[in-house]
Image (cartoon, rainbow, N blue to C red; front, side, top):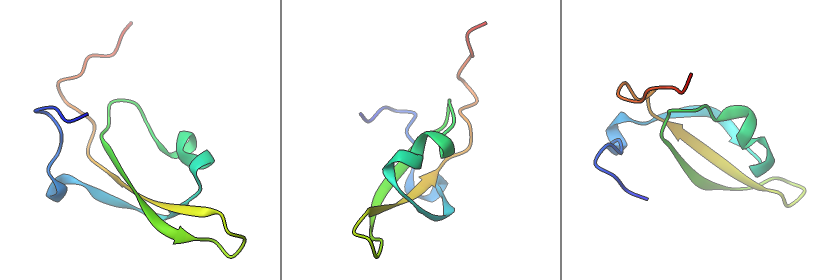
Length: 64
């Protein structure tokens, strides 16, 4: 989904490393925008992902 608050590619920074899809919930945080791209495969055939992230959204209020 694309919204007016989506970051431009220049606003995204790469998180070092390559990740498996089941590791995403350990890396991703709330109120941030992510771009996830295919980054090849591990020697065992597992697909690897590169993750790009923006700074936390300043206009998002957390529920209390």
